[in-house]
Image: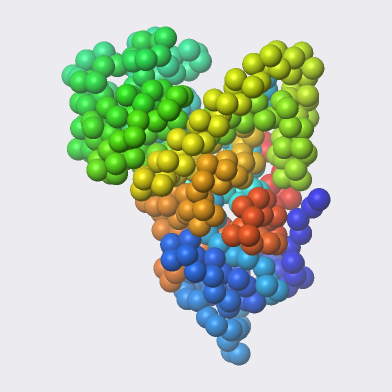
Amino acid sequence: MRFQFITAAMLSLASVAGTMVSAEDLLLTGAHIIDPETRQVTEGSLLVRDGRIVSTLPARPSNFEGTVLELDGKWVMPAFVDLHTHSFGDAVPGGRPDGIGTPAVANHYLYAGVTAFLDLFGSEPGLADLRARQRAGEFGGAALYASLSCLTAPEGHCTEYGVPTRTMSTPEEARASVADLAKNKPDVVKFVYSPSDDQPSIDKATLEAGIAEATRHGIKTVIHIKSWQEMREAAEAGATAVTHTPRGDMPADMPALLVAHGTVSIPTITVHNEYLNYFFDPAILEAPIAQKLASDRVRAAYRNEDMIARYTPSYDERKARNMTTLRSVGALAKGGVTILLGTDGGNWGTVQGYSVHREMIKLSEAGLDNWQVLAAASTDAADFLGLDYGVHAGALANLVVLEASPLDQIANTQAISMVIMDGEPVDREALLSPTE
């Protein structure tokens, strides 16, 4: 299924530059406007100028001279954000990765209605260069944000991939490393804190020192954890966010503890649960958007009979463990913890761009209501990056137009009619052309 723009008006605009259609003023009219911040749906028009929303209007102004997009009752909401990915490309079970590169991944994200993503570890100089090049206009797609590096123990997690990263063993080394990294202006600082893992980990004092130094520089922190005790200690150390959902039953006091310390959760349910679903539910990769974004190699890997046979004996055990993950995320949300969307793209069970929609389904299955899911995927996630997403005056005009309401069924986020980034409609099909 090819999602087309809904009116010929856009096609008659003056010129096409790259994948964007240029217009001085833009009016989206005849829309159902979804506001995840206020939990309200209004009917009317959105006026966009200079990349931002000017106002919400009850009807089309009679004297409007800009470009008009008639939405005919479609649904408009803030665009999506992925707060945990590795943007080299997609993993291929049993084979070499499908390394399409960050510029192509940025295009795939934008095709999927995602206008910003946070890379949480790759080549530090490479990511810094790519971020600078994108901001200079050398390539487009969704906006790249990055931790640049992964701060971990010598031989700890992140060191096994053959990509140089920053390691530390003492509080003094942590402070020095964060201070040096801060010169490169990371969007967040990522630490690995996993004493329960079979790989080495920094200790609590080193984590505390690193978080304190990042805070001194005004940089948010994201802590990779593996156990509930590690989540507890990361929050107590002042972490802005913890990422991943530990196995096993969640301690009853965990939600209150995270709330008390102001720590948010990026649970990455997809990376925990989806590889099993991909192997045993072929329909997942047959969805129209998956067909566009998952390569033939990726789809074929999940249909490999030997790989499926490998996981068949442990299917019930793994499925039960996955249900525990869902219960834990639901309990965190019910307890008042802010849940933000992240996929851990680049790993098994993920497809860059598509998995944002799968993560929303998983959050819904965990018990979040659809308003919570939409906020986790859009306005709240954007706020974590310091971005003002929404449908209010002054908000960035990064929007997605849907054929059906995601409030009725969260899977409707995949029924994308149009994406608008920085106030300009996107030619989505052009995004899938090979990048240089």
